[in-house]
Length: 109
Length: 114
Image (cartoon, rainbow over all chains, first blue to last red; front, side):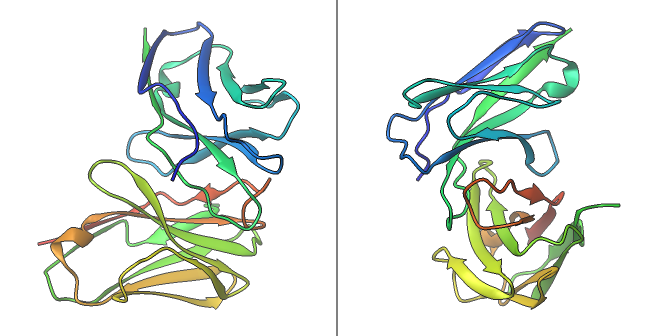
């Protein structure tokens, strides 16, 4: 079962930052925090992952709480193309990704 | 070049038939997966192979049989198709199983059983 909690849906305006929260209070020391997104009619797409430190890449930033019990995916400037379901997943070595319901992000122009 | 490719993209068939879905990855990854996404959009892991060996099998009916001829390919064969098998099936690959290795997904095969 998924070990993360995310809001069912969020809304944003184009060109504004978006902060997608994720709670994972039962995270273990070896769990990586992964974020994926799924655009309509496509397969899930890797966004970013981290273990303890905040991470940045060309798609997004990942802010991880000091106690690691929560994290936030940050899209710096939302575009219409960012409308998707975003999944926050804890990933342990030797196990497969377990997807939850995710957060459906809507972006308005 | 497509990193993870699945064929066919759409598959419509009748109950009781046997069908296969093919998956190939050109990323040089050691691990491949099959996921099923049902009509409620839940993504569920079905199988995982590492270097052609089955390592994860998540209570999938015996009618589903994955086959990995080499580490770049993981095919899914389904016998005696049932209505409940209708779903989108996604293939994925990663360098290692779990941990820090991100997964790369194909675009899915939409299976419709009538």
